[in-house]
Length: 218
Image (cartoon, rainbow, N blue to C red):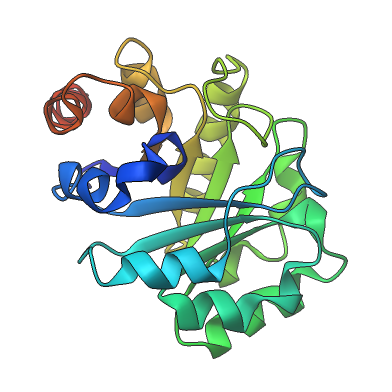
């Protein structure tokens, strides 16, 4: 399976969103980080912005909800144009119910784990998931450094999925650059989220292409 890439819009120039989106039109997804200022310290955007940019991109919208009690807003984000909704296991009391709410909207469901959250917490919901998002930094801000212990976590999750033949992708988000990409892909990452590495580059499209080449060599 080829490695897929999801540039994170959080790292883009918000004064030029339409143009910024076009710079990464050859990506596999557009990653949208929604933060509420409660679950994480930062505040970003909501369904309104997602709806407004939907007409400017053909990419699947990979929406990552870093919000408390995400079950309150599943329908809103689905109707805004999200193709995948990923929620934090730590942000809701009834994660299985939230997964079902997402699937009831006819879109894909993912669960995200913070760096300190054990993979054991996924045991009874993994068969229901389309993807698991491993946070390789603590959520809330872009531009952080990759936590090295997450490579082992990715590898263990990859083995869990393979052993049970689950149809679930592994997405990794946080601190991924050209110099550490190879080890992350080798560990089992299927989808790479990259924010500052792509949008912070002089030529985002060229950097995306370079990252694809690195991943393809693994």
